Image 1 (cartoon, rainbow, N blue to C red):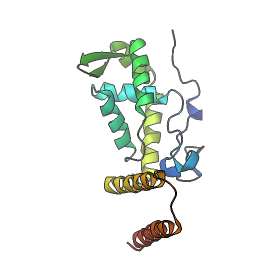
Image 2: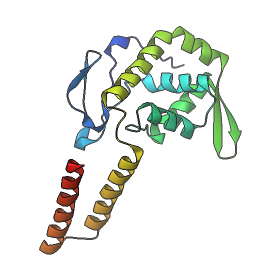
Image 3: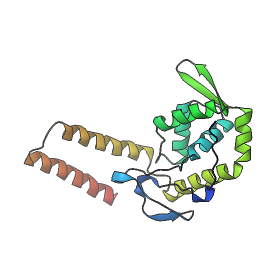
Image 4: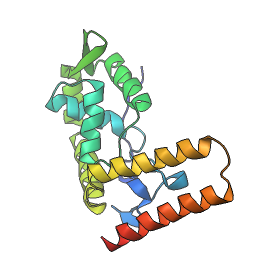
Length: 189
């Protein structure tokens, strides 16, 4: 059976959201991922500890844990359901979690084995949560939720418009002028 240990806790690192540069954090380099998207936030195995700790604090559904992690990062990072749910299933298979089925959602709670595992690895768990706090502080909690929503809306509007086909010269100029005007107003605010 698979056992997850973190043999080299000192080598773990987090990467910043919004590609906040080549800063040093806890002695480890971190930066954004490809295309200005966030890089890997958790090292291999870290998410397991985070999920177990969150569930130990309060039995939760997968979506609630995703939101709790997002909140801990000031809204700048949200783990993918495609990573969270398989990890929860794996933790359940190891006997660290128990899932109660309530319709389409599962409510996860920690088992005695899971509690013992967390206690045995409290140093690793504390280190991960301390790094999460440091990353959140380093990026200033990220932009306000309203700004993130507006940024997403702009990106979506551009994507939809550009997906409808090529722009003629006048349309390119109109979009560029609008974006430049918005950027200028934001800079002055």
